Length: 117
View 1: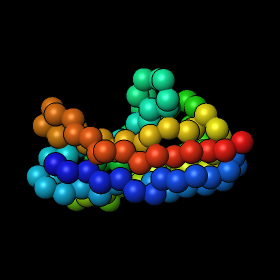
View 2 (view 1 turned 180 degrees about the vertical axis):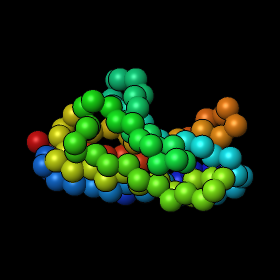
View 3 (view 1 turned 90 degrees about the vertical axis):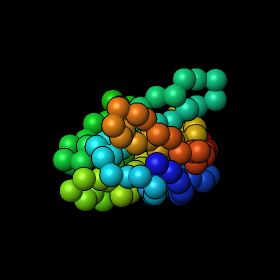
């Protein structure tokens, strides 16, 4: 499974960004995808995830501001997006796309988001 993120950049506080993650390779069996972020000097944390069923989960810090969505087929997820609004400086970090497939987790290389105050 290969994951490629895009859409990061520099934005002022209060602004918006939309991250995209495209899948390729052996995507059959991807049941869940998510977005994680890692701020400088901090551990990687879950931002949002979405199952093939469409059910989603969000970190408390982003509820009401971020929305995760996906393009799914009966046995796979093709792509996932993260719409981010009302961005705050504490949202700064490298955002990684993840995919759960057959008890293995796959990662993209990340896209950097910087929110200036």
